Length: 476
Image (cartoon, rainbow, N blue to C red; front, side, top):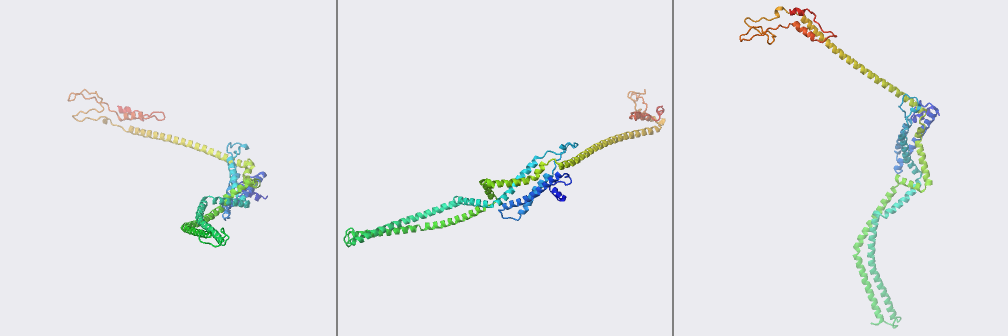
């Protein structure tokens, strides 16, 4: 087969032609592509036949639109199953081919088998119905006759028929009553004719008396009188029959009208039932007739039906079956190697990125900590520098001796500042109390020296005054 056509079949089978490196795999996947194309044609025709059967074989034009859609859906499922390679991403650093592929997904293949059976049943059935159309029509005709007979013996028609029979029975009863009067009248007339014939024979001498004539009070005369009486009774019976018929006229008319209506209703109902029964020849009825034929003639119709069904199921599952039995071939191992290598590289890159991110975070934490420490030290140095500058400025200032003490106002005694309680100068006040002895004032140099001592040490060494002799000078 030319390479271009073979590549088309490989594309139909949903595999990469560049990855199919061996002749065995090329033949395998080319065969799968052929089966997929055959199934597309079979599913298109079967789907169109199913739509046609569902439309009672009216051959709608849209059946050729539904068929390809159904076939395309199943082919898409087959291509997805065939083109799928179950790559195992466990033990990515392993080179053992047994670790390349995962175990087959049984649910995927079981679902495809169930789908194949479903489509085979749904698509094979219309084809078989078309194949045995003559036998199915004969069976449907028999079934329809049985249904019509059953409908005539029950349901609304049975009710109408019972009413019609009742009306006919009532009419027959009325006719019988009238007929009874007529029959009695006819019988009396018959008897009157017989008596009159006897009287006539007797009058001619051929009767019982053997004497001619018909004198009054004689035997012949009595026969004539009885004959005339019977004629009168017959006439009475005829009048009674006429009167009875007159009384029955209204009832007879009503019954006749009702019988006509009931007869029309029965005819209309039978036409409706016949149309309904004849219309019961769609997909369901034909399927039932087909299964009746299968059961009735299993070794003829049934075996052929099952054989065609199994053949179509095999054609449906051929692509997926070849994929299942050829698991672990060179093509799948090659695809598994490429996929596992890419996954391994991605995992290593991801691990390296995580390490870089962790290192970067640690470095940033260290930089922030060092920056905070340096800022704290700079702040301490700035405070120490400001304090030392203040000390230098204060030491540069010279306090005059005359300003060390403050003179008292003339004629007044001031209390010496910072005098301690209980210290007096031995001089009594006006009220007899003694003033406290004045306290030596604290110079500014001494305050500065105390502040320097209170300062924290810098670099492990305490601060010292810049001019050590100033304290002695000021204290003097």
